[in-house]
Image 1 (cartoon, rainbow, N blue to C red):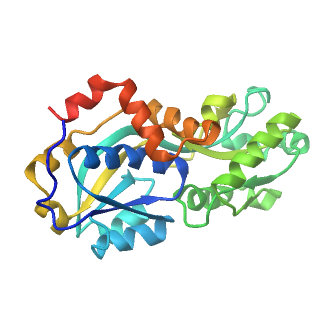
Image 2 (cartoon, rainbow, N blue to C red):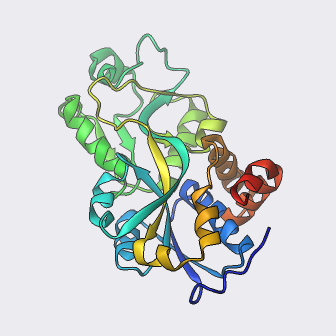
Length: 274
């Protein structure tokens, strides 16, 4: 299954976003590159740092970009200098959610959060968000205005992935009534019963594809074999949840989680190398 990657001048510099669900999605591609004989230097950081590095060719490859909606603001900055190599998985989505123990007849839609009887029952009107630069955060700030929630006391607090995880775990254990920003894929969907809220005003984009990108100049210098294999990588969104859970609950590093998933699904992997 391996082939020499020495035609490429030096290691492949491979960028990814520093959140576990992005890390595992990217690690699948990293392992493929290694099986093809490439050396790989992984660099990671937040969204606004990674995309400009790709545009400047300080990265050769990057995963994963949520297109066309989730990472739209960053795609606009790089689209003239990059190529979309493969859609790694489909169905990437942002939403706000509540615990399933909150009755659906009371809270099933973002618009329900404006109802007085709902606000009075909520343990908190503060929504624990992730980083300021994340697409989920930017959309959340906008929906507070779209649905008239900011004027009613709802607010989103900037944090990070770990703040969201800690908040969900703690509040679910307490039986609190609360709202959390969430997305798919994310391992919390596997361990907690959380109900996405309907979004009749379209504050969040339609589900995205999560794509592998390459700097155009770097892509053209990769061996043809590498380009062919990378362009065929695709896996189900559930695989990301599975790998993300392995990282967060079973102490796997992203590359180990990816390798274990790939070893469990040889027929999928073999198709990429065909």
